[in-house]
Amino acid sequence: MVNNVTFFSSFMTHPYTVSVLIPVYNAKSYIGRCAESVFEQSYSDIEFVFVNDGSTDNSIEIVLSVLKKYPSRKDKVIIVDHITNRGISAARNTAIAAAHGAFVMFVDSDDWIQKDAVEQCVNKQCENDADIVSMSYVWHKKDSSQIVCETDEGSSYKILYNLLTMKSTGRIWGRLIRRRLFYDNSVHFIEGADYGEDLMVMSKLCYFSKNYAIVLEAFYNYDNRVPSSYTQMFSPEKSQKGLKNVDALCAFFKGIGDPEIFNAVQMLNALTIADHMILCSGIRETHNIEYHNNVLLKRLDSVDTKIIKQIPLRYRFICYLRSFELVHLFVKAYKAAKYIL
Image (cartoon, rainbow, N blue to C red):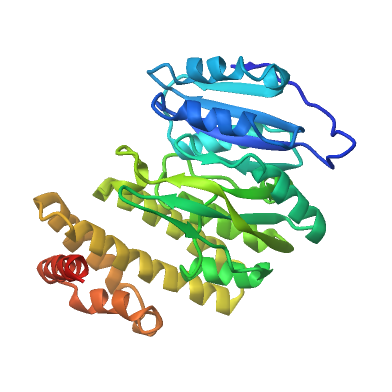
């Protein structure tokens, strides 16, 4: 169901409409903060697309309550309901389909943005005729916060290579993205594959983009303190979803015929396997041990040794250890040493 669907032409001072896309699932503890931050934006020509992904709490009621404080935003709000919870990938696909803006910006429901985040990104986009504008962000952890600066300004090809080799973050949130990149090139999230989905989509978007620009200031607040945050949990099921996104990238770039980029994708595959081996070994449980031995090691066996030699030493070391017990002990020792130091 779609409510209040209205498309507004741009104001004289604003070159186009931006669609801010917010997937929502049982976010009652923090959605008010998020909603307030997007309604407070200094850039006036925004439409707000909230996708209620089968929430069983009062998240949307909270959004509507916050909206009452911003009557000028009322007719620019779109709410789309999923009857059941379909996951973040499906919710983002729905948000893109419901959007009308020339550009879109994803904001996760547990995060928030500074008042001039959209305006600053639009200004940078206009200066550079960029297809993608990325801003730095504040990473809020349990006991501290740090600013993560974007430094990869340059050709989209360079950005793509850095994404695939994990030198840059593959996040979809906190970026201003030309909406046409999605539908002109059939770029979408794989429904149900809700782990590593951002990197898969961002890599494709970078491939199809012409210009990429950055805003050095940190206008996005990424909250990693939420206990239910998807990124803080690991399971074999989620690992399989992440590997599905990697496989989708391998298939896509294999067909492109660019040896350097395909080599980078193969490096991503090796890096992902090693990363999942580390995460999997964090808890010594039977299902993790079986998954490590029956899935991750078998997948590692299919990776060319020339590719493994190209990945960073710490990941290469994990690949050479192989054994669940050895990786488990190494991770424990590493964490202990890091704590002491």
